[in-house]
Length: 92
Image (cartoon, rainbow, N blue to C red; front, side, top):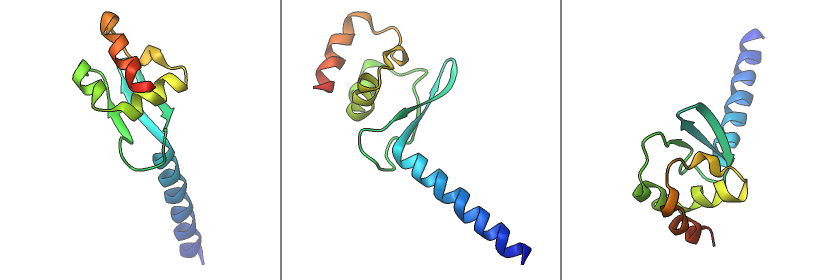
């Protein structure tokens, strides 16, 4: 009987983690970890390590950039200064 309980708890935990992974970006920054709600549910870009990203990396992930701007978390984009305007075009 106890084995069934552990199995059920494992299924529930796995389900919750799967739903969270499909709906949030887990982001590694220089300050630690944070999460950003995704634009569209899916498994792409579930974990993103942005500590050493270049402008090219940001432009290759337009849905992530959109999610950052729409959720008012622009502080996640460090040191882009004058290049920030080109990223704002991805959000439109």
